[in-house]
Image (cartoon, rainbow, N blue to C red; front, side, top):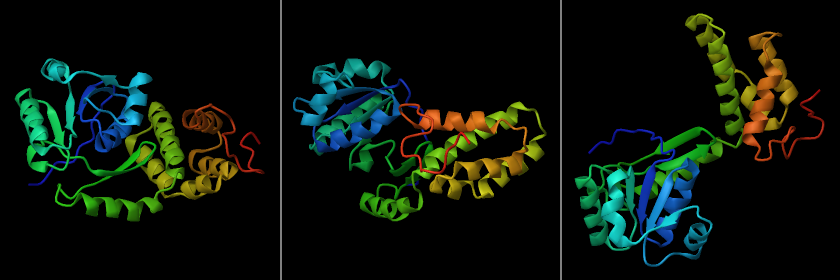
Length: 243
C-alpha cells in the first residue's frame, strides 16, 4: 500500500506514547523537538524517561486514563514490547479517529514514521512503506553526510530573505528569479566556510546595496544561537561579521 507523505504541525498538540522502554524513549526524544504535549503511559520507565517526567518535560499518566485522554488527543504511538497490546491500543485509537503508529506493526498503523534527516527547518524523510525500516535507516546514513549543519543557517537566511522580498510588493516573476539566484549562488559554500563577509558580498550582488542585509544576518545568528550571541559561538577568526 502506498503512503501519502505529509508533514504535521504538532505544536501544542497532545500526543500519547504507550511504553516506557528504549523504543518509547527514542520516540519521545524525537517528539520533544516539535513542541507537543507528551503524555506517557507505562508502569516502568527508563532512567531518562523518569528524568523527563521529573523535569516536567513529559506527563506520566496511569493506563486506566488512556480512554479518557483520547478524547482530545491528536496522535498516539504504541511502543510497548507486546505486539498484542500495541494492536489493542491501535484499535482503540482508530475508534476515536486518531492518528496511530504501532511500532514495527504497519498493519496496525494509519501512518508510519520515516527515517529523518533534520537540519534546522530542512527535513528529509525516507520511507520504504514499512517494508524495511533498516533500509530506510541505511539510506539516511548514506545521504545525511551530504547535508551539514550549514543548511540550518542557509534555510533561516533564505526564509528571512523571502519574507522581506515578498513584503516589498515586487512582481512574482521577478521574485522567482531572485529566489532561484539565491539558491544557485555560492551562499551555502560561504556559510559552510564561515565566510559571512563573502555572504554579504553575494547578497549585495543579487539584492542590491540598499537591501537590509545586516539586519537579516543578525537575525539568523539570533535564531540559531541559543544564547543569541553575535557573532555566534564558534565564529572563525578573521571573519568578523560586524566589519
